[in-house]
Length: 153
Image 1: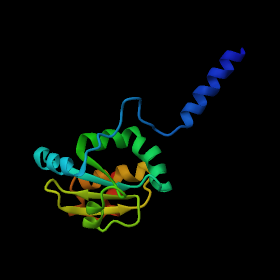
Image 2 (image 1 turned 90 degrees about the horizontal axis):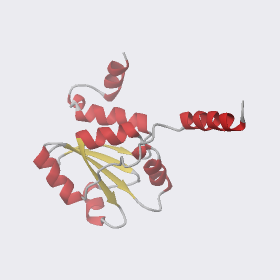
Image 3 (image 1 turned 45 degrees about the vertical axis):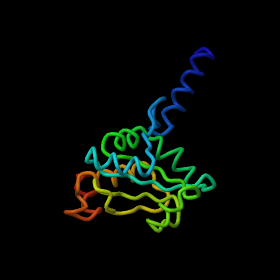
Image 4 (image 1 turned 180 degrees about the horizontal axis):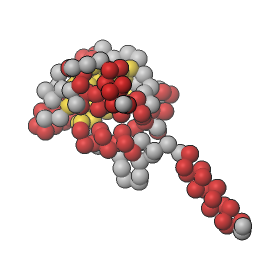
């Protein structure tokens, strides 16, 4: 084999090891808090409310991994109104939801009523399960564990 072929094989192999990252241009359509709540009511979509800070290591890791996973990006954009809240800049919202620690992800219904929360770093595969659990209203009928078991059968 030539050096170019070996190089191409190495690049392809390394690319296969990278998690399912979103393609260029595919990002979460983050909204501001007020605009997102309004859109949720108007479009009758549940709201994904994500609290973060620029100094938070787990927040940065979640932004670079979970929030860039192509499946998470697509599912959030299609089924939710995603709202990102900077805890240092939007204190009124932080106090309203009593947020601590961060990162913190909240789920609101179409009217802005809280459904549940998931504090801390959440890997993409786990977040996707939670998003589906909430979006399908399965949280009204069964536990999360039962939902996951049912989906993996």
